[in-house]
Image (cartoon, rainbow, N blue to C red; front, side):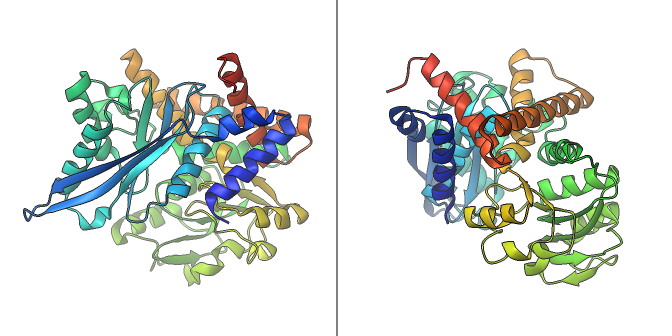
Length: 411
């Protein structure tokens, strides 16, 4: 099931639980604006190349729109729509004053030189600079983009509007980026996991974890969980999968993955088939890679008691039903991976104030937001007698619906 169908389905179930009227329900689903632009640049060899850039701005009832910019050869409009909509609910669950957006450029960043990427980013910014802004739409990095991309957008935008560090988040710290932003999603996963386990009378220490994906989110989650006494027994990334039932030595693995660009060949573990990573024996499974990886084909074989969705949309609705019959507790993506956007919000706040925080304050504030977010989700679960995914969706949709009605926007 594609991401848009699944997201719309979850939204409609939440709208039904909340008893929203059909006109309001319809207006909440329709994106505020969809932008598509042609970006033509001279390549290093002097030839011209054209790319399509786009931005979906979903909702701004609660504040400026917020969401990543990805550079990827296959940018699916449905997926971008789904991710923009998910950002609307995610920011509402986290209770930060944003709406949702998503965008990017259809290109393969690996095939472009640094100077070509810079030219492409600047042309894209020129095309959309009057449609983004500190109080309109605040982009961030996503697949294929990073702090350097944000620095180029900031510089190009500032040529038109004056120096505006708050127009993007995920910037290098030298240009107003926040301390703690790099680890934020992984640290949020840690705090979310702690909140869930505490609810079940457990803590992280001594629990066995399997992590699919060892990029930014997976590697930070692994590091922070192991520092808190959790035992990581298996991890995988695009290079392969490894397992050590006594627990992986995470500091050594981080060094190995840095030097070898992946986990494959790590001495302190046995290689395993990457396709079996999700069904390895463990207490807590953390999918931190792609969407749709847990589906009806493998859901029956999953041995974990808890699944923490660090990736966006890793579990298909069919798998949700199978897993709930097995009493597996799923902590949904729109809460579990909201640490990144929460610290992006802190970055934006620091830029607007012109006053930067130290890392300890960033991490303490993040813990406050994640802990309060879990409590709010649980309240909705009690009110509507539903699972955590519907608890999170009803919480997010309800907050956006209330803001929409209060602003007098309902149809």
